[in-house]
Length: 192
Image 1 (tube, rainbow, N blue to C red):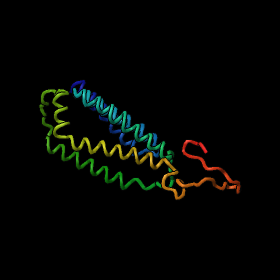
Image 2: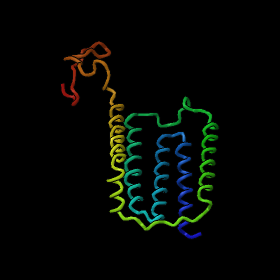
Image 3: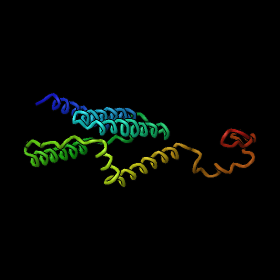
Image 4: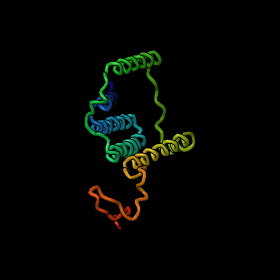
């Protein structure tokens, strides 16, 4: 076992542990931060496998953009950040299904390869990777970008409390306050 193998296994263990903490924590922001650790360890695995471009794309796209988008969506929607007692459910069914699925996949993997060595192809270049992404995978790439854009627009719409309320747009020249005093209507910029 070489040093690269040990490093690969260590980073894999960090990624699996952080992934377990992502789904196991009761705080949404902490789950997002554990997701950063998990995706960062996965980027480290890519670096060990000499796929530097994929590693840096992992850091830029997933760690830099998706996790920031997740945290901004939490902040914009004012979602409950702490633990919520009304969402607690027993965890043993999920642990049983997840453990059974993991065991089944491990048995399938061992049976498929029988601990044989797989020779790696020659290291790829950015040019070959770009050809594959923009020829074979351009449609999923664009669908993903539209999905992320829709998620961002949805977070902005959910954060705006004045959208969708009846009478919010047409307030008229004056409104009556809660004390019965007439208050002049103001526009979006705060001007009367």
